[in-house]
Length: 206
Image (tube, rainbow, N blue to C red):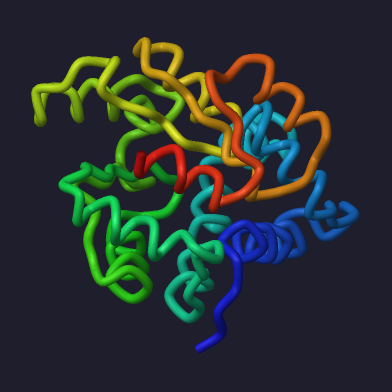
């Protein structure tokens, strides 16, 4: 089984979808893919920029599923240990993702030997996926939390927008990629920005 970063895996599957659905279109680079996912977001990339119909989006989604069933994305170095230590300190970890819940649970079990307390995956209806405030509202109601007791950590704008819609602090995950425009935006509009997992570890475990 091949192990690869989730962003690269996502892009590879998208390029295969483009070669199937838009063979005349030149494949995009990793940086272009990340920038599109940053803004306007992956859903808009498919529907508005690439012009995929509902049927074509179903094809793209199946190609993505085929990839994640056969390949396991790796966590960034130091993140499995951080997640495990945070859970051992009774921290709550909830995942809001463009992957399906079953894949997220698989990857957390394989890499961290723990499971998230809640998972909001792509199988949710579109109105409940990030940047919708639904996941954060559900987390707050389930665990009786106030916005001030939570922190959203993400590397893209939909996560930031979700946090802002619910009054929750936001931390930019700068270790995920090195794109100056995105880093600048995250620093300006987020509450925190961490370039390294180790720095975030010091912050969150303190």
